Amino acid sequence: MNVKTGIGIDVHAFATNRKLILAGVDIPFELGLDGHSDADVVAHAIMDALLGAARLADIGELFPDTDDKFKNANSLLLLAQVGQLIKNQNYLIEDIDCVIAAQSPKIYPYKEQMRKNIATALNINIDQVGLKATTTEGLGFVGQKQGIAAFATCLLSGSNIQKPC
Image (cartoon, rainbow, N blue to C red; front, side, top):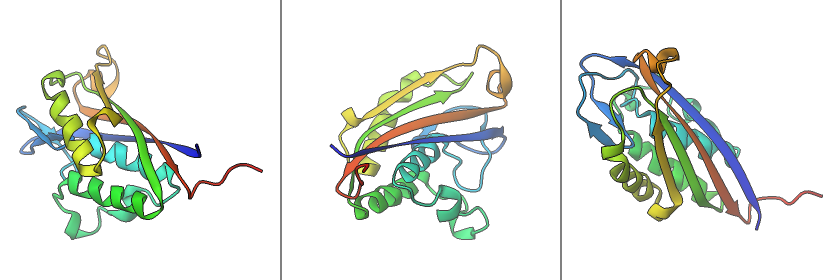
C-alpha cells in the first residue's frame, strides 16, 4: 500500500466570553478558546495533519484569520472541506490519532462524541479516529490552565502517492 503520514498541532489560549468547542462539542466550562474561528484546537490539528500528509497548504493559508468569512467559523465544517480536498487528490484517510493536552476541563465525558463528530465530518468510520486526553502535570501553559493544545497524526493511502525509486 502507498501511504503518507502527517502531523498537526494547534494551540489556543483561554478567553472569557467564548464557548469551549473541541471536535465540535460545546463543553460546559467557564472559559472558551481565543481565536478567529471557533478556535477548535482538535479540528485544527487534524486539518493540518491531513493537509501536511497530502502536501497541500496549511489551514492558515486555506482559512486565513484575515478573512472575515472565517470569523467564528465552525471548524468541523472546515474539517469537512479539508476532507473533500483530500478525496479530490485521490487519497483515502486510513487513520487519525489525536491527543488533547488540557489541565482542565476533563475531556473523557465528551470523547466518544468528539470521535463521532470527526468521523462524520470526514466521512470515515469512527474506528479510524483515535482520541485521547492528557494533562501536563501542572507544567507549561497547559498545566497553568492558560489554554489547550492538540496534536494529531494521520495516515493517508492512495494512487496519488509516488513510490520511491
